[in-house]
Amino acid sequence: MAPRFIARQLSHPKGLLGRMMGLLMNRHNAQMNAFAVRQLNVQPGDRILEIGFGGGLTLPRLLEMPLCVTGIDRSQQMVRQASAKFRRSIQNGRADFRVGTVEALPFQAANFSNVITVNTVYFWTSLGAGCSEIHRVLAPGGRAIIGFLPKEYMAPMNMPVDIFTLRAVDEVRTALHHAGFSGTSVERPSLSTKWNVIVATR
Image (cartoon, rainbow, N blue to C red; front, top):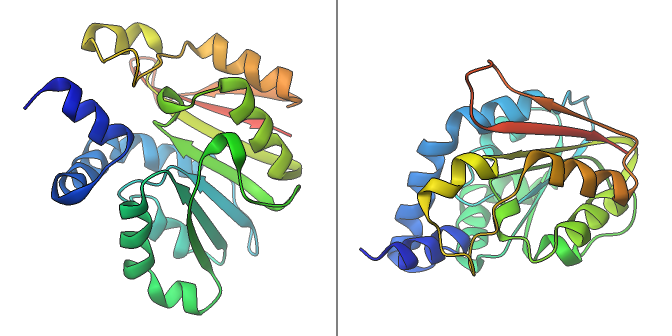
């Protein structure tokens, strides 16, 4: 299977292969997603936004908590799958899934307690716009949790540059600072962990 075709499916899953890609992403990203969820430090009644939820790996964990969870994804298929799987949570008013992008979030300002996104920054068309939109929809004191594999580890994979934009940790932290976040930290479960989870406070 051509690497370019795989890259397109990673960025925007479609069809049967898209469903398979969602399962593969869940398996590959399990540790990073679990670690990122722990950084949310959620409280009962929090409103959580997940950007690019893909195969929906974090959604069961979040919906086990007394929270309201909103998900946005570029893939209509991923939105359909999540809407079907978590239909009861939607009916109970605890979940909402929509098609959209980080650069133009379809939500009012200060609408969420926390925002989480894992392995999506490679596909943002504008790092600055994405960080600014996350800042806008977060309530004061809210946290943005951004997990990703840094540029130095992604580069050897030779992903198509018109689909994947590799991101350095300092680049993401600088964009968050320019967007108005008061502080950032980089969290990893161990020094040998290659991926990073940036925690930014509004």
